[in-house]
Length: 328
Image (cartoon, rainbow, N blue to C red; front, top):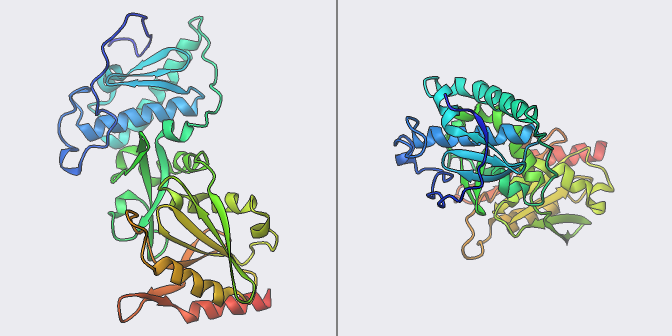
């Protein structure tokens, strides 16, 4: 077996072919990978993600990806062909632990060979470099294998971000399922640029905080909503013991109302009107529904599909929220 971890030689090399970091179309996922045989394109991409993820967990920031190697900022390279030689005969679910052990041993071997590999400092581009980000999509679009339900209208998923474009990882099985990617994917959300903050006031003193983003990943901020609200003085002033109302109508906006009292109905009506109206040109809708997000992060819908097919408020849920606010 060739050495797993090697130093990159200074000899110039031809630019690598492109496409090996792209998520293959569903119809091509089982095609042979031209760079890492005998794996399929989907299996090879999973191995690349596993190697990169393990390097980052060990404090080794990646500097370059090639069809057959991943190079760290310290100048060391993981030979992906050697990794594939060790795991190709294993079922996909069994490859995760083996890849992690190989990369861990390789890093240790490189560090003891007179070349200490320092931990790289956090980069403002880490979210793009990591590529893995927790996402939120409309329920019913993806199969259950793509991520868990977040209520009747929303589903969590993992997004692979390459060159600023986010693509859904439709099958998390090779990555250890949602549990296997959750921590890294949520960490990727925290590294995204902070959203812009706007406040919309409604009758009864109901403030709705609208968070807008230049990237199309505003719904992803639901995964770190408490962290975001902690940075907004007006959102944190009254506490969040009763949870929040949230809506994600499209990829560039997230609306939040902190449940504190009599403004619940006004906020819910305003958020529903905002979420259900026509989207700006070019923006793909996420969901026109409004949800109550409990202090534990669980979502329940405060809207339902009415007889006309349009969303309408669920007054039973809102009545429970109003009663809880009066008792609090």
